[in-house]
Length: 327
Ligand SMILES: N[C@@H](CCC(=O)N[C@@H](CS)C(=O)NCC(=O)O)C(=O)O
Image (tube, rainbow, N blue to C red; front, top):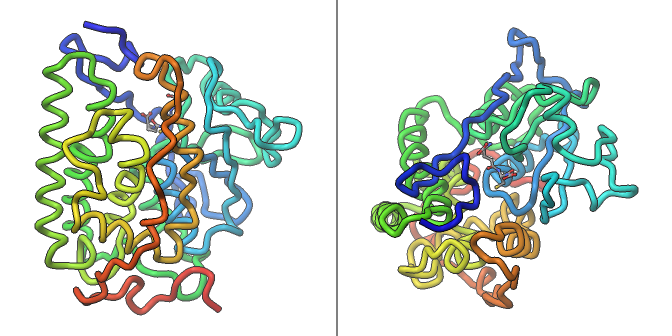
């Protein structure tokens, strides 16, 4: 068996087994958790490369929470100390003053020894991590932060569709969102092939579904679309090559490719995508997979703006809501 990118998260049979989210406090509307949804109290730290963080970036924008929750963006390249605020003046996060995300993790738990991950929601006053639970973070933005949503914010997690959204989120997480990592970080042929088969089997099933309907659940954009989008938008730029997810490129799967372009061209999605951060991060931050750190020059990106024709399937992106940025 060859070298693992993350030995502590690699099983004896070469499977990638992701660490648990360490901080799972919840911010609630009524403050019953000890953390109230208040403007200016929390700081969201993301990497624009990271699909898990990208979810929270899109949802924050769609719901108009940008004023209420400030944003910190880390350098796409991690060094041995992890995520750094080297894009900011003086190398410090302007809101909390930290240089490294690990400072917030260690301020919360001095014994913490796992990977300090994004997204992380920090308490501005204490500089500690409230949550790095990306599964819950966006659902709470949608339900617990309602009083601070913009007028016309869409309903991304409608009560009557939650069962169906949760069901699809679970399989999309297992086979697609995390599936690409299970391909990329596998250290045995068998573990890689299992993850690869599950990934493309799931993409085939999603194709069947999306052939008939514009969005994954119901007639409007929901949390389920946000979660699938963040993996699809990275597929050809990173996962196809770097993680060996290469049965097909996204651009060779017409239904999913049109679906992804449709979302990309919807306000709130495309403007949150940074292909430079994505490519640089993946190809230059996993030395066990890509030791020379060469970043591929492709793929061509113009096609993301090409017409998708998905309007013909009916549905409307925001239902009775309005797009972000609209007057
Ligand atoms: N919180 C999750 C997922 C978030 C995650 O893995 N984020 C990545 C970026 S895509 C990260 O921050 N990695 C930091 C590292 O590996 O040191 C976890 O603990 O696995």
